[in-house]
Length: 420
Ligand code: AMP
Ligand code: GLY
Image (tube, helix red, strand yellow):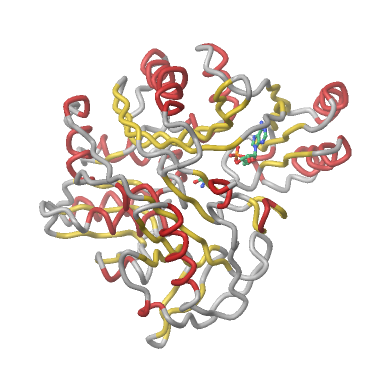
């Protein structure tokens, strides 16, 4: 089979890494890919948002299955367009992808189907939002409605901070059209967990639970990023919680999407807070998480391609999805300054010294003059696999010590919540 993966970050590197182990795949392509991916797949220089060119490429190369990594092309309707042209593509339709693309859509779905989540209200008017926030008090959470690369969320500890966020989203237009509407949410207290699932209509096959670390600095200090590190599974959290999340949240969500006429076909990312009153949804994404994928896929025993084929044939229910009992951790190495402005083009050294069971997933890199250089905020994800989390963590940090670039930053406490 010939498979095309759309995307070019650490998540797509992990997807390609897993797919490259499938004996059924004759040729792997990635658009646009990155220098790490280029060792496993042929990279084609087409942007993830250029749906027309991607479809032309898939047709010309007789691609059997296209897998879509990022949210942007999904929200833009890549699946609808490929289907219209008779091309096989794995991922949710534009309508189903609204579960990520519009927080208001997701919130309304949860309200209608009694899926536990934080209390919320949506506003387009600054004055109305302001009086709601003043009445509710802090802590309170302000979110831009629409895609803002994980950075459109402000967890305000004080009312003044919430007011600033409202001002910047509704008055200054910081997030472009994504900020034209805000969702104001009740602050949820507890531990966070990501549960990724393969979803096909009402069938849900959960993956191993993972935990992300969003703030840029140790001890969850500093601004939120796309994610600074992950680990899976979560040894300190009772595994019965996954069953409860499935029954109370993910399965009802899948049924709700079918009921609404937008059956979800693809990877459903459920971001949860484990509150005293039980698990509650923080957000849904219509795709694999980044960097959750970099710890979840290395633990998957089943051939990922078999899962995609079964789903596309409407037979996911019958497939047994198997996981190893090992642990994985991923530590992100980022450019100094991220999530604010950062420099690009610095030479990265030591990559070739890292060996399995540690894996270097490239996120923001480029190759110039035969040298791998930094080219993004999140530069690399160093994943390590071990018999337990401690072993995996030790190997991940030993591997990081072998890699260097100017201004490299990483959190030194990834996974530490599991050891408290
Ligand atoms: P999101 O982009 O919606 O995942 O939000 C980014 C981060 O903000 C989450 O990972 C949480 O750490 C935090 N967050 C979002 N919503 C809430 C909430 N209602 N209560 C507490 N923290 C939240
Ligand atoms: N790691 C968070 C996300 O992928 O949205």
